[in-house]
Image 1 (cartoon, rainbow, N blue to C red):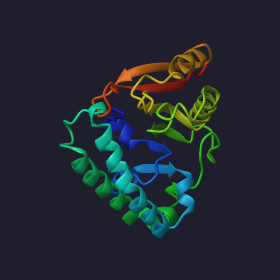
Image 2 (cartoon, rainbow, N blue to C red):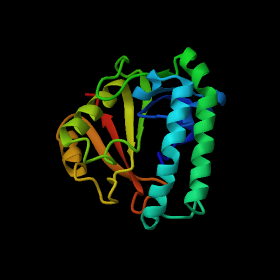
Image 3 (spheres, helix red, strand yellow):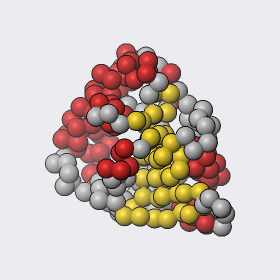
Image 4 (cartoon, one colour):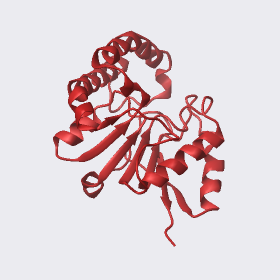
Length: 209
């Protein structure tokens, strides 16, 4: 979903709003350098596991209810997707305590990140900004993206659709805001698509004068 190249994966990566995803565990096991931030990391492994077990049935039910909004090519059906996601979350749980001790999981949330300027080569934000456009307003999107651009040399956000499957109402304003300032904001195609119409990511770079 972020069109990551081999050179991207060799850099220092920050994931914002990563939650119980397995990317950190997988990349770290392969020797990569990654840090994940999310307020969920204030909780213990057991507390997060219990939360996953509580929300999992509702997640599957939502997928079934809105199945027509998705492309069922990578996944056969909601049950298959659910099993893949549960496997990924279990991999996260297996890695979580060791990752906490190593400082790879950090309790923090946008728009305040406890990192130095340009500490990361790449900052990623998946299924948070733009997806929750009803809950996060335009000003909050801009504030969060400015902060990501402060700590990362390049920022990528996916998807650009809100939960209703439409292009986020905030996207035009965000593009205009950054392109009118010392940033390069672009939409770029990605090779992944599950939510219908979600074939692009936003990339942001601060222009160094």
